[in-house]
Image (cartoon, rainbow, N blue to C red):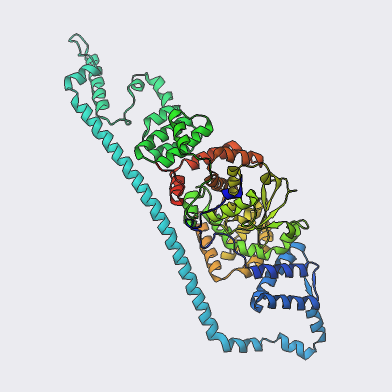
Length: 593
């Protein structure tokens, strides 16, 4: 295997101009790292303050931005270590001041004069900021309404096709019923009553004749099957309650792909359902989706000759070569797992840059020394290592900014994320040795999905409790009167104090909107389910690139993932869905006749 596997055709491939990743300014991250090193001992000396001033000048940071970063880092450091950072230079200046100087410094008169001179400019600035915030909120609402309209249009098309199919079946049933002579109908349904029968027997015969006419006139699928109708009532009742999945499927729409795929939600690995879906799509002439279903049946070991032939005819064993990157709207509508809560993701994405920058001291304390050895960093675009190049290849397809990559052969795992203001990836021995191209593609896609701004804070340990504190802190920033228990308040308020200075006006406005949506939904969020859904979204991204179920399962077992069988069932459900087929077609990797 050579590194040419993980390449794009520069003449055809269209990258995403604005990757959807957490973006922390390089200069902000560098100054934060310098300041975190200075305050680590709890004292800022005069020499260190001069060093910080020089660093800010070299990086081109203004005094206002420097104060903002320092304020956030000081709050995070003091909350973590339970002591205040002392600045020696300030104490020396205060000792050198006379009582008159101290009274003058504490007077608010200069501040009043400054406000009087700049009040109009400040008002205009605030007014412009308010208008910009409102415009961004309206644009966000418009984009959401457009996505909702597209989904409703797709659902309307599906329902229209179902209605047309039902009308055709109803017309065929009526034509069949009309072609049977009335005398034949009566002779089939019940024998002609004899004159010697009692009146009660005649009434029962009439009831049977009425039921026969009604069963003939009813459309297929709506009437009770004759075999069930002739059973005694005592046996028919439990049969209706405990009908097997095969009987339930026979009563439902047999040729509706959407309905068949909906039935797979409870049993994604059901070969009978997959085979019925494969047959139903022959009428729709959807070759790529039939290929995906055939591949799932081959993986499950349930493919018949026709399905295996479909898979064999269109699989090349090579990696896909998309013509463009996945757009953000496509990720949210087509790739994201349906149970991955948008409010949670949007909230975490809004505060992610501030969290990474403001908590650089806490991050520094949690990292072992030399965890990102500069000597181990490699350039993915120049490296000949397939595992390294796979990250660059996958990042371009998924529309994610490529992180710094470190090759750590002593790391006994495939790959992990080191969470710093500029997050980085470490490739371990398990991805560097013995992996096929499809396995590397799955590893890269699944790993890089966590770099999206709504998912990054779930790394590296994916703690629901830690995410809950960050979300409550963000909601507290969006609405200061959020009722909290004393225990939760003690944990969350320091976090809010840390990240609030690093959020601009539009970000604060978006947090207010998110708080409103949170309240409208009843004030409930399920972070455990969100984490599980995020895992499935990342796995779906890996399968989209690998295009190989066996490779996906091999990597999941290699990494010791929990409940591999359930994850693979969810991947079958995603890969055979209409949304996956739509995404493959848009990326230019769908198979054609």
